[in-house]
Every structure is written in C-alpha cells, then in structure tokens.
Amino acid sequence: MALPELRVATVADIPALLQVFFSAMEDLDGRRGRPLQPRNAAPLEMHFGHLLSTDPGSAYVADDHGRIVAFGIVMQRGGSAFLSFLFVEPGWQGRRVGRAVVDACLRACRGIDRMSTCAEADQPVSTGLYASMGMAPRTPLYLLRGLLPDTSLPGLPAGIARRPVAPASLADFDRALMGYERPADHAFWARERQGVMFLDDAGGVLGYGYAQPSGRIGPVAALEPGYLPTFLGYLVHITPVLEGRQLVVPGHAISVLRPLLSAGLRIDSAPAIYCSSGPGPHLERYLPMSYALL
Image 1: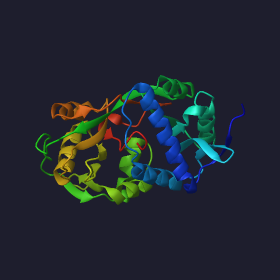
Image 2 (image 1 turned 120 degrees about the horizontal axis):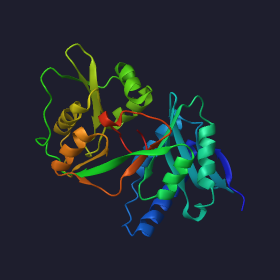
Image 3 (image 1 turned 180 degrees about the vertical axis):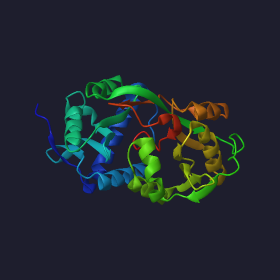
C-alpha cells in the first residue's frame, strides 16, 4: 500500500494532531494494560502552537486523502534538532510511515550537527528506529510526582540574588549548557510559569528555573550540579500547591534525583530514554520541562 502524502503541518492541523496523539497513546495504554489517561488537550495545544510557530518548516503530517494519520515535529535550535513529537495512528503503525515523517522533518532542517529525541523505555521499536537513524540511547529521564514539602530541600546559600527571567541575559548561559540560545522558549515558559534567574554577587548567572501553580517544575538549569537542590527548594517555596509536584529528572542529575526520592517523590511509569547522535546537553545540571521540549 502506498504511503500517505507528506506535507508541512500548519496551525490549522492542531485538532487533527491531538486526535492522532490521543489515539496512539490510548492504544499503547490498552496494549500495556494501563488505565487510560484523561484527554487533557489544553497543554498539548499550547505546546503544538509554540513549536509550529518557532519551527514552521520542520513539522510534517502524513495525510491519507484528507485525514491526518501521523505527524512529527522537530524543534531546531542552532545546530541541534530535537524530535519533539512523532505519533502514528494505530492502523498505520509498522508500515514505515513514522520513518518517512521523521525523514521529511529532518530534511527540512539546515546546518544540523546533533539530532536527538526522547523515546519511552517500554517502546523498544521506537528506540530501535531512532538508533538506526543515528540517535543512540544515552540516559534515562524520570517523571517524578508526589508531595514535596518546601522544608525537604536546602535553602539558597547567602549571596545568591534572584531576579525575574530576562532571556537576553541567559544567551551565553544557554549556549554553554545546551549548545544553543532559546529566547522563544523562555518567552513561552514565562507565559504560564514563574521564572527566576539566580545570580552571584557580581551579577553572573548561576542558573534559572520555572514553576507553575499546578505543581509542574521545569526547566531548571544550574552552572554546577550542586546548585540544583537549592534552586528547586526555592521554586517549591515560592509556588505553594495543594495536590503535589511533577518534574522530569535525568538519571545523570544525581545531585537532585536522590534528594527528591528521599523526600517522598515517586517515579511515575517507565522512564523516557534520551537518544542523541552526539554528546550534550549537560543533563547532570539540567532538568527539562518535559520529554517533548528539552
């Protein structure tokens, strides 16, 4: 059977992208014997909108006679391409549609020296696909949930100043940490999260972090791994919540993974696996926003 037509995704496609996403996730949950999750479309819709506005040429859909059956979205920042989303309707899985969509997304990128993505650990077929494309499995990323009292993490050391996030002040820091600048991402996070920069006595950037009243925390970045627990402690303190916290912690970020687990957070479901064609970013001192937006 011929492959569906591949074309560039647009904002008008977002409702169809949501349908493909939920259809694929619910099929996977059913095959794994997991309870179906509520269809919380609003955060995904914002996420899709952000990526389609910042990377309009590197998002593709597979269109079967007017019906979208698969999509992929690649986020390009500098020389780094990150596959944020790849989802295929159950009836089209295993028919090379996913590979064709990824190939189209990556061909649209220019000047790439690192390709990466996150694959769920309980989907070895996806992990194998990414490895065959040069994105080798490198480190697990854990989703942690639970109650986190603000007394369970250390406070900020004396001499560390706090300021609202100013993206222009973080360009050099992000370039050293991630390999690229990301002012558009900071603007996106600032719309729904409280963002804080941490500075030393001379005004040098020690890191930054974002937190939501919903309990979501991230991204959080630090100049040194030892700063992560104190930055997290501050973010927890300034954003009290009722139901608990949620954050993504790489396995390399041991300076904060152990304290969080000791404080009572639990690992929720199988981890994601960060897959990449080359080293970086510095995940020992960086907590992503999610599996889909590093």
